[in-house]
Length: 97
Image (cartoon, rainbow, N blue to C red; front, top):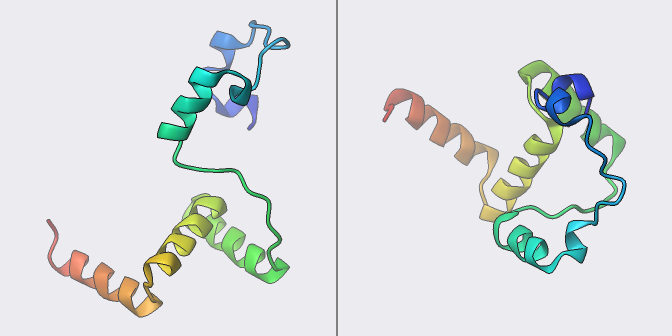
């Protein structure tokens, strides 16, 4: 993250975190992270073409390619197809809540 993109950077930039422990070494924080974190860091290999497509789409739409990939994986797990997603989007647009 660029320091300039974080609005709280100036407020906390003077603090020294060199002796900070990782969350995994603080049982109470590790438990909280497990209960409320909701995400896990993974390392995986992705085809260059697939990654480029997600990055290009994120640039066009102004989002995060990682979030888009997470959403696509979530839809796959739910068994949603592109047709299902388009159908749901059309329904939402035709009948807003």
